[in-house]
Image (cartoon, rainbow, N blue to C red):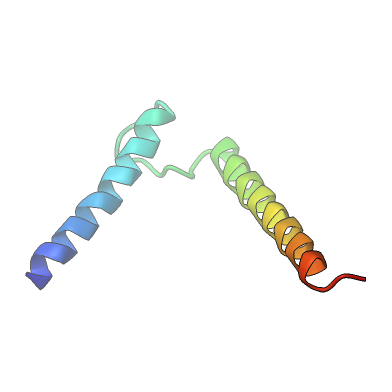
Amino acid sequence: MKKLLYFIIILVLVDIWVGINLANQQAPFSNPFGSPESRDKAVKSLQDTARKTTDAVERKIDEIIPK
């Protein structure tokens, strides 16, 4: 049962890898972050997520602790 779970996890990870490449019109097993555009998009996405999370946390803190 444990081996089946590991197999499913590995399959999902490989599927995501291939899916990202196909969505970017690259070879299925190439590096999905090989092009500078992909790296820049990934970094920008992470920065946006971090900024939105920080804003949400700050708003929640302001709601809990009024000034």
